[in-house]
Length: 447
Image (tube, rainbow, N blue to C red; front, side, top):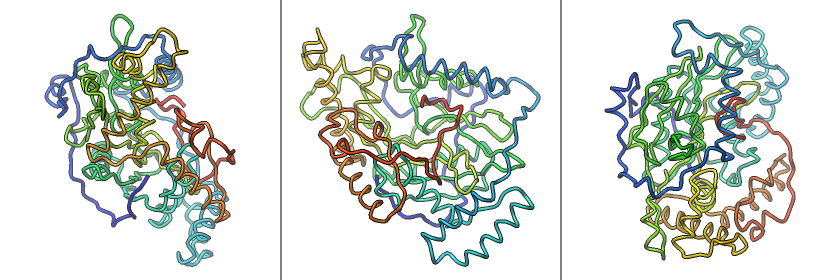
């Protein structure tokens, strides 16, 4: 991961995503810049796959507990949910004390604590200064137990958009974030923080797991075209008026929920999405698979929590560990694009038994292809071997600074060749640290 220090707050944005209000309008706005892909080249997922079952369970839970969320767009009345509670004074004070401990030049601690107490007693909440927000976001990245790329946490760029609540502005600023973070392939780690939850009203939310996601379409025979993990979001977007092309790489629209749980859908402009065509440095036939992936993973379904304040919409990004995140998992997992059999076939491997290690060999070459393709396209990315060593330096730095830190062994170790990395051979402290990023309880992304 890498990035640059935060810049001065800007109040303008450079794009206005089209609001989708019906199928007729959608037909004109659903174009992408990417060339058409032969659907026949992609193995389609069966109904019983793990990802599909997880997606169906999510939809069932959401319908059971939050039916108004999915159906409110059909109803003239508003939907009222529980108003967020007041800020816990003790939690807020602890946050301010930690901030001042790491930022001794921030001003008088006692004065700031007095301001906090007065605000909470009067309104039930308080407002972070920009420096407090910036530190909260960076510390949250530092505390992210499932992220192996935290060594550049100090460089996270913070876009302060706490005044933004309107769904169209939320979408526009998220797309502006995507454009800015992409930077022509020179990826910049960034976060955009929208309005927080308060005792008076909820902040906005984005239901997509990432700003760019590929649609997943259920086929009549029970198979899936595209990404199975995104079937629920695809069907929700379609119910709200969006219509895709039905290809394996249709970019989904942003689904934004306002403070009254109304849903709003906005097209992601094709020119805002940088995609990388996947080829292999040695296998010419690899290009015929028609694979591609987007350059920047902007996470949109997690909230930032700091000092008792929850920011329910805080899109953030680093850059891909392309070899494993894109290659082995997104494109290779049986419950995702399931490309290992196609790669094995192209390599002429014996697939009669897993004992021939054909899945292992195909996974390595898929990782090689993705890493090569990102590099050839000039898109910043890292690989699992390099990232493992960077993580070990991060762990050593945190221990040397006597700061509490944590890591989830099962997440930070790569899905291939784990034992060849230094991360594999030690244990890590498991603890919940705040400030932090947390997934919404009803997120569409399986945990």
